[in-house]
Length: 314
Image 1: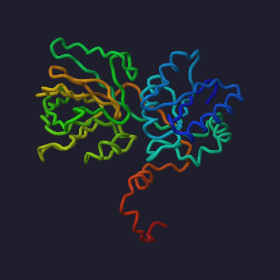
Image 2: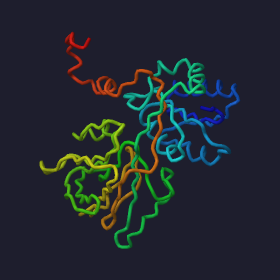
Image 3: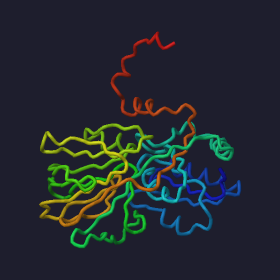
Image 4: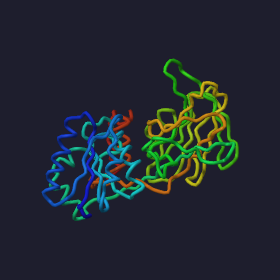
């Protein structure tokens, strides 16, 4: 990998993340690398400025933070094919990030990257588009910088359709079509359309299935449905999930991408969710990376708390 122009993003308001970002910038600039650096957070989005000011292709995005910071990076840089080196600095769970212990010898990291001593993990993403049913034309959003081609929303974890209100817990009624066939009308807190990457986040919290991130599949998971017959479903990656809000007199239904508000959806509009034509690319520095070990550690599976000897293994 060449390191001629690199994005460095750190978690906003986290001192350690910012300090390590500055250290990385100094080291790479000393190696004749151009740096674009800035904070990322609920009130900070550096990517539009970064992507508007580039004069040559970006070789790498270094993301110092947690899973939320990493998700924001994926939504912006995946369409450009920019690989992401995400490191858990100031984060919490760290499902998508490399452990800090592997990264702290940064000079060795730059050497490994230049000598291609790393692996790349590709993860599928979702894109969503809102249509006005009366015209069958896409709804044109305004003022949202988390858009692709100014019409499509991207997510690495999930698209979620659910209502939002400042003073009430609202129930939504959503009709779902898959590839044009009506599946069900869900009444409850909302609906999650997720990726294998997102299956260990909001999807699993809503009692959905866990899928290996190497798969290409789409999960549809109702959130607290009022019918016990409403169950999660796993779909082929080529499926199109269409969601219609019904009986929304307060016009409170929203589309969320990776937990970030995308847009409002009114009755008479529908959201189409499908697999995106771009994938996020994550740099793996761990030579002994195991997804199943990550599950055991991050989800604290109870079976690992009681240790038995497996003398048959060897």
